[in-house]
Length: 617
Image (cartoon, rainbow, N blue to C red):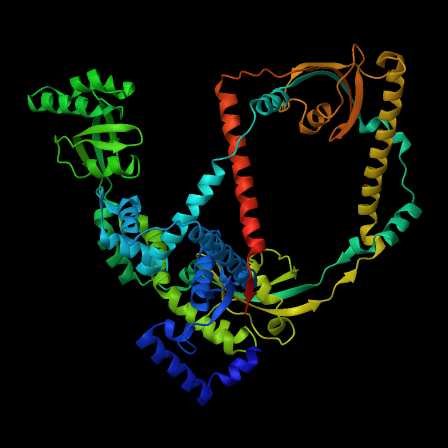
């Protein structure tokens, strides 16, 4: 496929088509391509109303961008485009059904109503007032026009009216809430003893015949998946920096440019810290008035500052350079003249009044001391400027080349190798699924082309090719016999522990005790809740799954744990306390009512969807 593209991309017909596309886009925009050739084609019809292809493609684009934004390292090659289109179409059909239902119920918004809602939305306001420029810019950043946004607002608002009405109608009986709380707050009294794995180790033996039988019966488990050995070129800013030659003249010029920064400036600050509360503004005003009247800053710090440590020193924080204080504090401090007091500065700690007490600057270190560091900085800076240019060159060269040696030689880069890469990935950089997907594509795996240049991180781009392909194959028995032996040993040990636990429980139920059986002692746990972390989740889950004891009889059970098998003797079930007037009861009732309302609304949506007549194109 890539070869066809390579062969045809230079043809006269291709150039004419591309030229027409460029002209169309420049004059009429994307709409000329999406919907200009055939009016307004539709992708589906819902109860006679069309969902247009233009609307569908716009929402597909928005949804694709949304899913990309959720990735740690956004990579379009990882998007499942077919699934996105399917999800978007179904959501548009559902939206159309709900909008039609709202219209049938007489719910609608006038243009004035929509304007009123928009002007009240905080994301469109500046200093508490609606700002049209912000509104237009925000809507366009969402990939929509103003008219489309208004129409979306109209649809969503009327649909939400119905949703809220149904969702808020959920009702839950008080007794149902009380019963759930009794169960949730229930505690149990039990005893427990643990049998370690070594108590049955003398009963466990794995033979060679069992190993071979397991191997024959589980062939699929010992399939070595197909894998490739790959060659690749990794382009990074660090790689370029190592290749950059920094001359002595450039270094001296850079040293001169940085001399003002290299002379480290430290400032000695004092502050008065006030908690950010209702009285903060009044307190700050009082302090500022007293400062204006000539009172001493340090005395006011001792009186008012909630930073008790520095307050004892008159608010003195000592000397510090940049990067020490909160960003807002630092910005204010480094704008002050000596002896000057700042305006109030808000940080996460509270509100500060800052006074600059003194400034000291160190001498610029000689070039000889900073040469290595400055040379690296300058190399990285020059590499940053060249990265985009070299990346484009590498992409073009690798696209046209039959191997990676030529592009690497032309750009002074290194061809590296990685082995045993499967479709699930391998060592970095082949832990990037987009790169792995390219590596196993038909063009690369079968036709021998290079991959596209893939950005595997913010500072690295990789192009690769398959050096050697190894088909999936069966691992020989001698390679996996130790693995099988360990698995069978573990399995037989657990079986022996289960059998031993069942035998012990049977004897306990017949009236014997642990001492008679020569087993360890019980450990008692009284009034334990479900989420007790002391004995582990598996044990507590088993404790709360046992049936309620009758009278003085204990109920026994066992559960496998990492340390062996735990034998449990459930003694009592303690009902949970329920305060019908408490916050817990009220919150749970509200939550359950909300869930019930949501279920009713989902059922209502499903009812409308099933009744709708939908035709997909």
